[in-house]
Length: 199
Ligand code: GRF
Picture 1: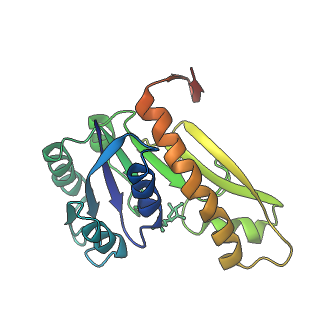
Picture 2: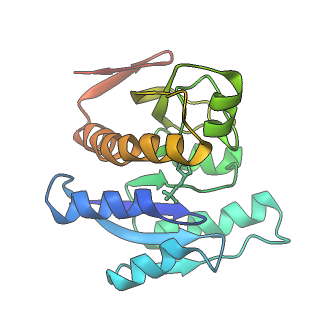
């Protein structure tokens, strides 16, 4: 059974969706640990409620390299096969990415490469796009930049607020993150340049 490690910083709804997929047998894996750089993250509490090992490793005042070394040690201890960033609000160091090369996924609330970074839904609204969405991608040491695994498109309505648009996107995030995890765990894909091609 493959082991997932989840990194998060806040609400944890993507973690919950993954946990539901695991519980339903749709993702054949176990969640080995949930780690947050924010000790107060709601997601940590949700993990504990599910009896999943949950660790707060505060990042405040710690430099990136040494923080990531602590993180690597924790993830190795938990023997994780795949790392899923789920609202993890820190860029990973090159050392971390090398350690888990092609074994780190992230979900981002836009159709990358449009609107990387924070507040992607607000960026989309302000830009005036008619279609946005979400993306699951492999993580490299750059922000929201690695090879794309799955995307889902979401319409932007004229009446949308940042909240209504975010909610519509979030539904799709919850759906495609588990799908992407399934694909990656199955190993039935290849990476050609930036293209992730299912077998
Ligand atoms: C999601 O919108 C995700 O795409 C982004 O951060 C948000 C996390 O939400 N990376 P949650 O903590 O999973 O509820």
